Image (cartoon, rainbow, N blue to C red; front, side, top):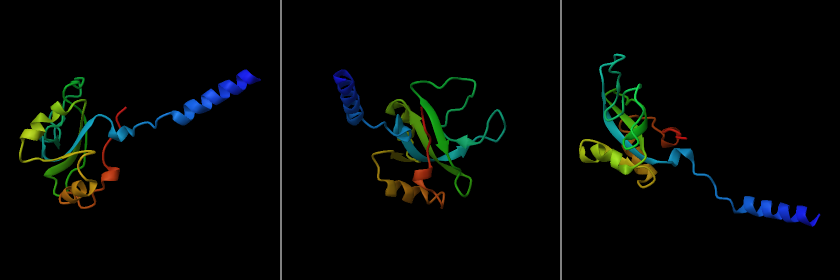
Length: 134
């Protein structure tokens, strides 16, 4: 009886002290940008955001951008994009391109991000944008 009580109390203590899991939408390094659309719309060269990795036959490089999510702007020329990488170094091309509006997820204010992205997509909502990475 005492052993059961002790095991029960230990289990309860472990559950109470456990940390919450990180929301999968906030794992890895994430950058939100507005980039031009590129590609001609063929299967070999589909329309996609500039700097988005493309080659479905290759495994993503662990040092590069591993995933992205985008919506096409209202005029079809640009795309608000969320790029995901293991390390910030993967975003070096985005940092150096001064024509790209760049935001760091978790660092820049949500209102500032939404204000800028609504210039391109009128009904943009940051809560409904992004991707879940396992």
